[in-house]
Length: 275
Ligand SMILES: Nc1ncnc2c1ncn2[C@@H]1O[C@H](COP(=O)(O)OP(=O)(O)O)[C@@H](O)[C@H]1O
Ligand SMILES: [Mg+2]
Image 1 (cartoon, rainbow, N blue to C red):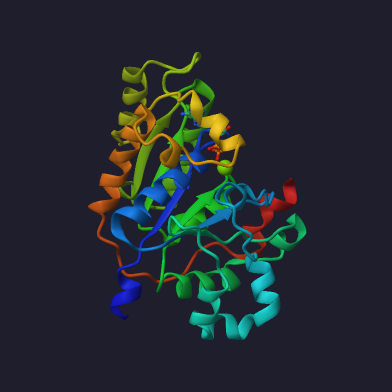
Image 2: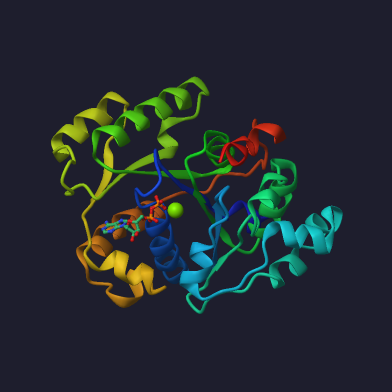
């Protein structure tokens, strides 16, 4: 294991549902983290629907993993680290995006055995942020290779029930719960349980809550204009709380990577086929 790859971090952002704030948190934290530690960050959206949200917001037009595999061929992808690196454009914040594919059908053809060698190569130059939509096989794949998982949830009953269900499955799979950090986004929305109740709920799952992130009026507007809140308004309360996540990342000791997963190829894309 060389120093370069052993010092890289793989961080997952996922949660119980769509719309809880995974993409907002991961994108803003990616910019903060790239700036803080002067190492570039590559965001990999594990999104079976292939929305190109992050690329649009960052004003990038990256090739997809499916396209890179098609041009370089499966064999050379893992051999040619520098070439692979050179294909991924970075925003001037030091953050790039590598989507799985641009069309759902192409994403459905990708499997862990082609994705893992690419991630392993990328990790020699970048820290990797996986923005994982709530499909269980993709989540398990991401958990398998991550140093840390930010579990982003809302505080309403349905998100918490879905969280409990996933944590039960995580327990059954023997994932160390210490790898997970709970982040309650939109904790002050109507319909949300009181923070004390949410804390009690997570205590039963064996977790303290790392951060309660408030509703931030300007966040949806900036997103719609392809702007990033942390660039436009770094002094908002939401960004202040995001610094707690940054602090957690800063104290993380990245573990040695094995680049292996228990998720089999047909399972991985199962979520995509169900769409
Ligand atoms: N704390 C927040 N305050 C206001 N709007 C938010 C907040 N978190 C997320 N949003 C908005 O909610 C929508 C869904 O957020 P997003 O980050 O895309 O969620 P996910 O990736 O989990 O589907 C977006 O329009 C986003 O701007
Ligand atoms: Mg998202």
